[in-house]
Length: 328
Image (cartoon, rainbow, N blue to C red; front, side, top):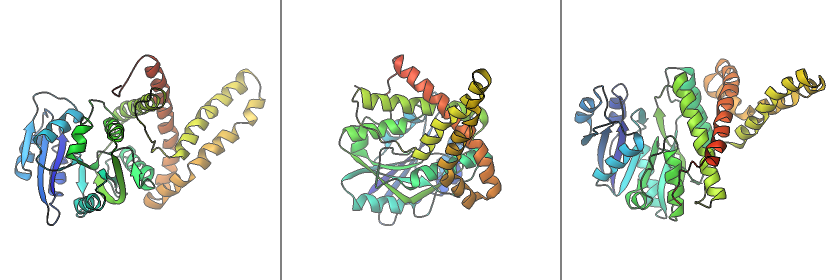
């Protein structure tokens, strides 16, 4: 089997060398590594050239979807492996992916997970890395998202699905829906893991998470109301329950002040529901990062889900105003 690893990179000089040095061919298989420099202003391309087989430099910044597609057009492998310029593969990552594809010829793709020891310069990045592992670790055997931190897709199926749509974020979800519309399955293996080195800063976090939740809602409405394929959600149900409880935590004090103090007596119920629904996640944080981090995670989960709720509202509004992400 010949693999083509495609890595979109934008101003990734700080992390890309680590990514490239972590990639090695599985025993008995061929490998090529293609880096697509998305018009970086730093030394991304120069650092990549001695560490990979080919570097494609785009004339203008086009986003990761276009960059991945351009890299895939240059690829000669029968399997396209997509990862990011801030991801470090484990020594057995590609070997496990090849083995799973060989064991399951009926599957068009195989997807892995972020490792719990993924690193970040700040709390937000560490929290989100752990959340992604937690959200996906119980998935399978099939998923609907070729999660692009580490995904291998058979080239024929990738192009049949039209490649990555120019949607950001959630381009991976769109590809998953299109793969399913063409009758393909995506296998998930939690033993296939990579180490994520991304750091989130507040402005980026607010922008990305709001847009992510908005697009997820639009995709759900398109698939369920307009019949444009099928979509399985991988957000844990516990987080959905917490997201429903959170508005009541904010609303009941307001009703207590304006209508009747009796509403204040009901306030403990949604607070308890919120904390109880996320108890497994908080225990997961405690187990891997300690009590202090878990307590900070309790506070941050309120902020995180409030942002998600805002994105959900924007998603319904965007759908009503005509936003569409899938082909009819």
